[in-house]
Image 1: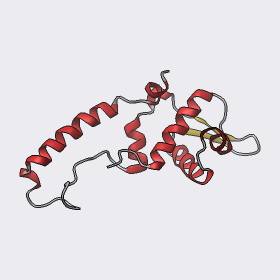
Image 2: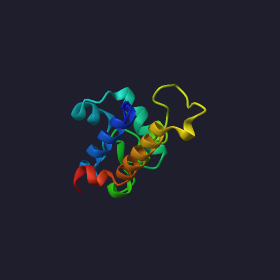
Image 3: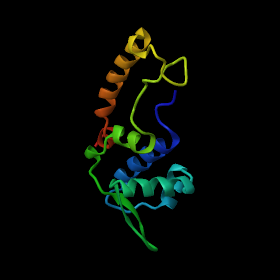
Length: 133
């Protein structure tokens, strides 16, 4: 089980990089050069972040992206939800979908408890806490 997909990982790395450059504009070429993140993926990811209100963009020769939110207002769980959907470990470990006995399953109760603890911890993670700002 991977908690973060490649898109979420790239988005977090790009946002951490941008927070260190703020208020300077960052281009996809900068991310490619400094973080070795592939441009085709980054363009798509940055557009999603911009559309969701995390980034502001300027087009043109000296264009690029800047943070549209302060790092303390960017939560890891929001980014996970944006790129992957809600954080959940609630699927059955043995089947592709939940079975009829899911409500009474002792393993599912344990997993849901772990999920609640993990989600509570993840909700406290912000871009600021990742950068030490």
